[in-house]
Amino acid sequence: MASTTPDPNVSDVDDRQPTSLSDVLVTVGADLWPVHQQDDPPVQSVVLREPADGDEYIPRGAVLLAVGYSVQGPAFGELLVRAREAGAAAVIAKPSTIDPESLRSLGELHQVNTVLARQSGDWLQLAALLRASVSTSTADGVAGARLGDLFAFANAVATMVGGATSIVDPAGRVLGFSNLVDQPVDEHRRKVTLLMSEVDSPSTDPDYRLTYGSTGCVYIPGNAETYDRVAAAVRSDGEVLGTIWVIVTDPRQRHHVMRALEELLDTASLHLHHARSYVDVKRRREADLLTTLLRDPDQATACAFALEITDKQWYRLATITSTDQPTHPTEVAAHRLIQRASTWLHLIQPNAIVADVDSHLVMLFSGRHSQEWTALQHHLDDFLRRIELTAPSLAVVVGRELHDTHELSSDYTHLRTLVRLTALGLVPHRRSGAVVLMDEHLPRLDLAMIAEWHRSTSHLRVPVLEQMREMDRERGSAHLETLKAYVESNKNIPATAAALNIHVNSVRYRIDKLQTIFDLDLNDIDVFAWLLLQFRFAEFTAHTIRPDAA
Image 1 (cartoon, helix red, strand yellow):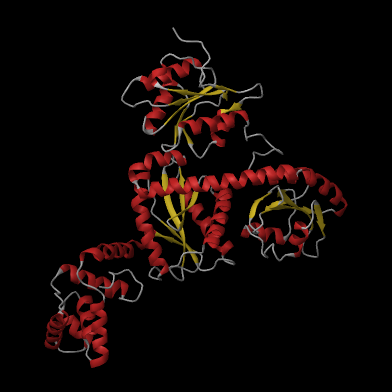
Image 2 (cartoon, rainbow, N blue to C red):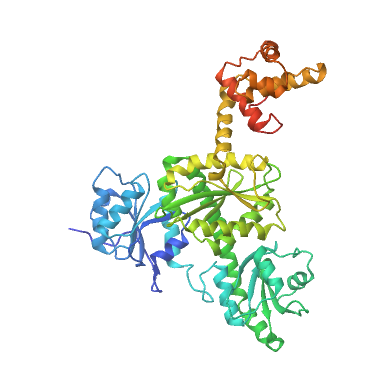
């Protein structure tokens, strides 16, 4: 007989309005990934369950944590059956218990919400986090917006106070802005919105300094080109989290706007706090998952579930690189670029993922129809034009269209090679702010990949070519010129003679001599292939893709 004794592992919530499962998952999002969610029931409690618990009582609306279950045994399937019969809200398992696809299939079979937890997470910590999220949900609609969604909050503020609203952090980055069509904006607001950043630094801008120095709202008169504004600094324990700016088109409404905005400052503080922590956690989580996805194809399925991209039909990787030199941006510049790209993607491609992976700003795009990419490519070009004022000479390098997440790892390797070629100027592009497609540069990419392979297999080293050039300079010989013509003609003696305007016997003599002097075997396929790459592709110039100096 099933026990009806209350379980000490069960944490009951109080009589307040219960929190829905989706709200709990949003709150704990960094550690939980739903693989099958058929409904959104209220969560009443959090329960740890082990195989030894057998027929222990399962409360209705409970989230069950499946601790210590094995995929080989029947106990986990029986737990799902009992969870459905008891009306449990969800069952949470780890990859060591069951793989994501099987967990989703079982969830569909038994009509139970199933969730995958991070393998490295601690069960007790997760239970405590779940219980905290159940008792104090962060999903209350403060000012008509979910906590941390600064775009929705900006729209809510704009509706309440009656003017276009922007939210800016202390570094001048635009964190959110309203987009209500009936509210006018001026050219300054348009420019700041496009750049996702203030033109002048807040530390030197007099309007920002006035706002920081005031404890409430301030009124800032406009001029012939800008509307008036009401601004306020959002603080928490003395720290300035950001500022809110509201356009005032009718000066008679200034006092109404100031009063309304003043009443929203505490709410704004909650939003900014939550947004900052959420963005940090989300960015770290996505960077970890994307890094694993790109490095370890064996983890592709689990990472794809966690990133919620398993239902997509196509995938494309992209990264932003300099078209001037192969240097990474500074930490501050990289953070700024990531923030801009993240905000832009939030508006244009909400399901895209952007993260810092191996010191590269990597973007993962996905969709259900191949035609979606055409529009997205135009958006990428537009994004580069928008940031060109503060970050010139950039290009977006885009990988191939893929249809399986397991292919992303190898495509990322090719993408990094193409990034280096672009930065070195070995891949032609239209201008700064270009979208460089891997599909258009496959021959160069193939050569580069061969060169990378040859790095570890050939005994030939570039100093041989440098020695040859130095000897030619000192003695007036033509070893390097002869070798280059010979290699580029694919060992054709008459063609080499014609290129150098000398007799064929002179070519034979020169080739024999340079092979002896420099210990080169031009009949060795590896040696000849490397020379061909050097002369046709890398030109043995400094900092190109080539073997390290011996």
